[in-house]
Length: 93
Image 1 (cartoon, rainbow, N blue to C red):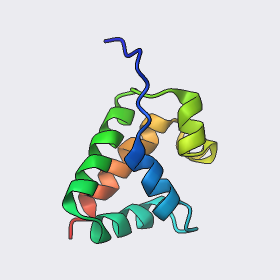
Image 2 (image 1 turned 60 degrees about the horizontal axis):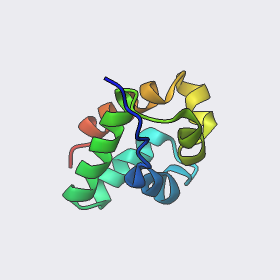
Image 3 (image 1 turned 90 degrees about the vertical axis):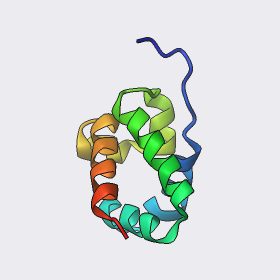
Image 4 (image 1 turned 30 degrees about the vertical axis):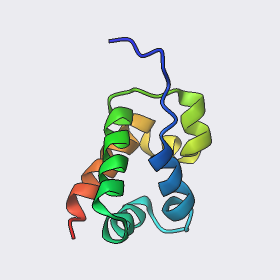
């Protein structure tokens, strides 16, 4: 499957700006997100992370949106997204 269109991932941007830059670990930040945000917003973030986990992203864009430190810490944005999805699943309210 080829993906010429590179999604901008607005919910990932929102999560990073409102939760992911708080100084808390991503695991804690995504747990807070799941607890605080409405179900539709959580579902939107989950869908965007699922796309990233499948490799549907532009590396340069992800470096701007998510930050290269997350890629360095987890090995890839795909692996980061997989972990985020796992943490979201474990953060059920």
